[in-house]
Length: 89
Image 1: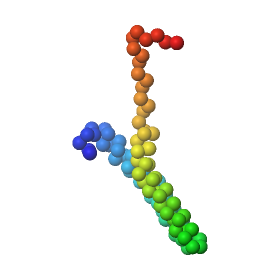
Image 2 (image 1 turned 120 degrees about the vertical axis):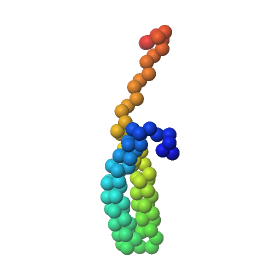
Image 3 (image 1 turned 120 degrees about the horizontal axis):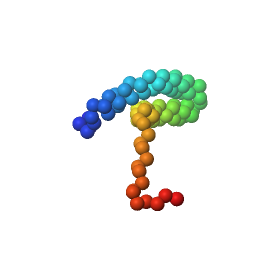
Image 4 (image 1 turned 45 degrees about the vertical axis):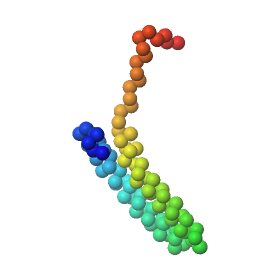
């Protein structure tokens, strides 16, 4: 997987993972505390369902946050120039 990336892309990816770890660790801690509270305070299986929903949210954050950080940091692509013979309206 890394063989396809040049040095700049590898550094960009590694920096995104380092940047993403800080908010993810905080979100995981808060999610864990809320899940514990949900299972203790809510009757029947509703607490377990809410814990599962919190877990899925944190899992989605873990998988998408580094990619989102890379996307935010990369400059927008330039617009391609129109062909030489194209008429503009």
